[in-house]
Each structure stands twice: as C-alpha cells, then as structure tokens.
Image (cartoon, rainbow, N blue to C red):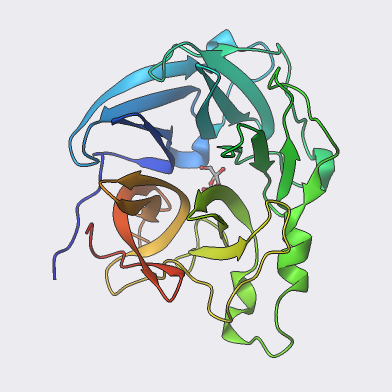
Length: 292
Ligand code: FUB
C-alpha cells in the first residue's frame, strides 16, 4: 500500500485549502500542547505536493481582543480581497488582506461572533462564496450555523440559520452505528456540479474515531440529505482521527485536505494530509492511506 506522508511537515491541524487561479494556499492551525498558540501561517503550492512557506498570515499580538488559541482559519477571495475568519479564544474575528499570503489585518477591532453566541462554541469558520457571488459564513462547534454576509463582510444580510438541526432531524429512526455521524464541528461548503456539498467532523478531535461526514442539497439552506453511511473518511489500520477538512479542485479531480492524529497512543497532536476524493454513486469517499 502506498502510505502517504503528511502534506506539510510538522504539527499542523484544521487545514483550510484555497484555490486561487493556478495557485493553492493552505491555512492551518499550528498545533501545540493545550492549543495555546498565537499566530496564523500560510503555505503555498502549485501542485498540492510541493509547498513553500510557512509565511506569517496574522499575529494575535496585532489583534486587540484575543491573545491565544489561534485556531482553524477559513479564507476565501471576495471582490479581489482575501478574508480570513479566524477563531481566537473561542470567538470568531475577521481579517483582510490584498494578498492570499497576507499580512492579514483585523477588520473590526472586536470579534464578529462572541463566546457562545448562537448557543455553540464560536470556532471553525468557513467562508463559502456561491456562484452568484454571494458570500456565506458557516461556523460552530456543537451547532452548525450559516449566514449570508453583506458586502462589508462584517455583518449578516439576514438572521443565521442552524443547519445542524436539519442534519439531526434527517437521521433515519433506524440508524445505529452511524448515529454519531451527526454534526460536531469543522463545517465546510462546496458546490460541485450544481450540488451543495456540506462536510463536517463528528466525535472530538482527540478521539481516534473523529472522521468527516457529508450531506448534500440543491439549495444552500437545505433540506440536506444524507445516506445511512455518510462518512467521507474513516480510520484505517494506520491512520486515525481524520477530520476538520476543506476541499479544492486540481486538474479535474477534487482533493480533501484534512488532519489526522500523529499517534493516538501517545499524543493528541495532529498533522495535515491531502487525499483525492472519489465520487462513488455521488458519495464523496476518501481512502486516508493514499494521496491519489
Ligand atoms: O485545533 C483546535 C480545534 O480542534 C478546532 O477548532 C477544532 O475543529 C478541532 O480540530
């Protein structure tokens, strides 16, 4: 078997993969014991294999309202600027840059989403820009929220809608082993061939069973459908705790960028990988042992 090495060397988690023209940018969390780290970094690649960086994207020392727990950024391009929605001390902020490599600058001087606002942990932001140009913010641990953003990128056009409620409601009554494939954290939205594909992670990131699940819809607000087995990744004999993913297209194929536990027997630290997504009967499936 073709065991795969991590995509970038070191302890990096929550990878957010952005395709911008022919270039790819990777925005991870720098993993550390206790997750107390204060900077966001970015890597760059042309082929998803060879990466340069890391480059400093944002330093919480330049942000007035949080000093630590720099987690899980979500970055996308909107009207020729790059917006980073980042978690810091369990609140979500917005930073902007003219370049995907940064430096990003805090836009609001305060969090966009405060601690436990909307009855969930305010972490794990995802910025999705639809084909019609409308940007949406998704976020949350414990609950998944979505809201359309105004042009200023720091206010909502309408009230946030809770997507995770639908995901729970849609579980079949007879679900058994996959009951736990409902939402925990790390939402990510893509539109592929006209279908909205929502992915997230279940369990806890320190749990070797942590894995990526999916649901699809013809409308951004749902209803979202999922098959009985809606796992995109699952632990292999070698790799565990594969979660917190994002996706990008490369040469006609889609790739999933996610983290895995380095060694669940000894540590909860994580490393970043990329694997090709196979669409089997419209289900996105990833073999975590392989890159292609
Ligand atoms: O890296 C810190 C947290 O762990 C993230 O915000 C969660 O998604 C989980 O991966």
